[in-house]
Length: 124
Image 1 (cartoon, helix red, strand yellow):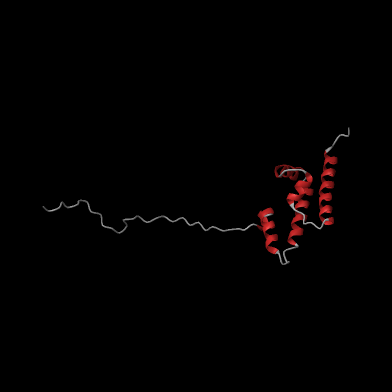
Image 2 (spheres, rainbow, N blue to C red; image 1 turned 90 degrees about the vertical axis):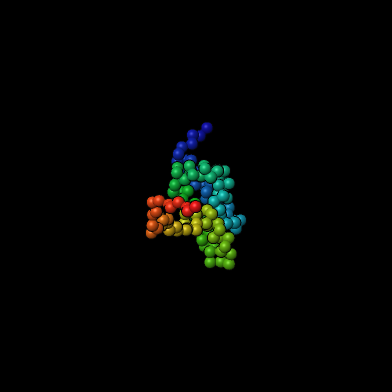
């Protein structure tokens, strides 16, 4: 049995990634992160581990997928493209909202009201 080394494991990983992209080209299919993960037979959690182990090829795969989708933005169906980009590359394309938080010290409710020490008794 052939011993799998880290180098041979990386080569197999690279070959599988390239195989997925070639299939997308041959079938005129848009590459997607989910499609790549299915082709590789890994979950999103496993993909995170793979990205740590082989960051160069994993990032290049992500960048290629992003580029293909970004290239479609000038077309007529850019809404779906933006939806995909926002959901799969949120850190870059996700909607950003700014919040202006101002802390104000509330004024006392009775400010300016004269304090009465003794309440006069009612006349009988």
